Amino acid sequence: MIRHDEVTEQPLLWPCCLDDLRLPNRVVMAPTTRARAVNEALVPTDLHAAYYAQRASAGLIIAEGTWVSERAIGFMCVPGMYSDAQVAAWSRVTGVVHALGGHIAAQLWHAGANSHPDLRGGELPAGPSAVNPGEICRTPAGRTQTRTPREMTTGDIDTVLADYAAAAASARRAGFDAVEIAANGTYLIAQFLNPRLNHRRDGYGTHRSRLLLEIVDAVASAWDGQHVGVRLSPYWTASDRSGGPPAAGEYPYSADDQTLAGFDEVVAELSQRQVAYLHLRGRAVSGAGPVPGEFARYRKIFGRTLIANHGFGRGSGNAIIGAGIADAVSFSRLFIANPDLVSRFALGHELAASDPATHYAGGARGYLDYPVWPAA
Image (tube, helix red, strand yellow):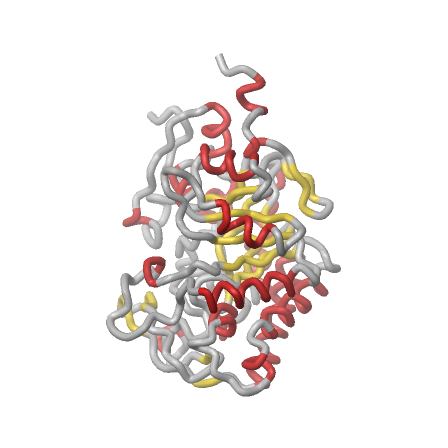
């Protein structure tokens, strides 16, 4: 028999608040691209509603990244947040999650230079500068190398800001409880933050965090200054690259002293903005647990809610919250294979492993067919 104190002693299961949202636990479902919007309009389907409903016991679901406009697209079969049909379909998703007592946030995404003409009707992607990010795109023709983008004009940047504001308003209309700005990985905002990709001579180059800060302001305005989060990945390196190591040359993303010092400044600036939480992807947690300094570094700078991410399990998640270094922990692959992850943590049940072959394809297979404990 499981004793009450065996459950309540787990910090992952303690309630917490995000602005005025009271979350029942600190187990967050991380945004995880699953490429199930297999339709021309990039509308979420009944599969999406069922998938998130299965995981509604999370303290907070952060839904997969959604495109802020057609100009933002850089990955196949990812849903958008820019059309009336998409908003209506997302409303079904949020409605069923709320009916089950859950909370769900939308993540807003723009690929920038990490895209390909085959995903944009033949149009060349745009980025901060005309520098090839050296990434691999999933296109109808298969995995394809990125090309050298055109440099964005100030008019392009104004359009991006308007797209984020409109997508944030759409997410609110769709019934989401919060919204997260995807500034992590290798996509548009991360490109602007990167000195190896951003060679601009204007204010978006001399102050590389300017685009992110202006996006935060635009999104926060649509949400009355509440329930806005930002996801960052200061430690992103070649080992995180989904297509494997770069073919040749220096990979533009590196967790060196210059990069980390730059992120210190970014996080300090975010702490002065209307940002409810910082969703921080660190280095992958080993079996021995996280290196405290990696998350404590930003804990000292950002005074509000900190969500830790990347490779955590039940033990390491409880440890980092119990130590006061993070307020919550997000999980990606564990939530793919364990729709009942919260109860498995609570009861100490064995965790299932996901099938990588179905991460980005497969319809219902590998998406809705992971059983709750005990497995059949």
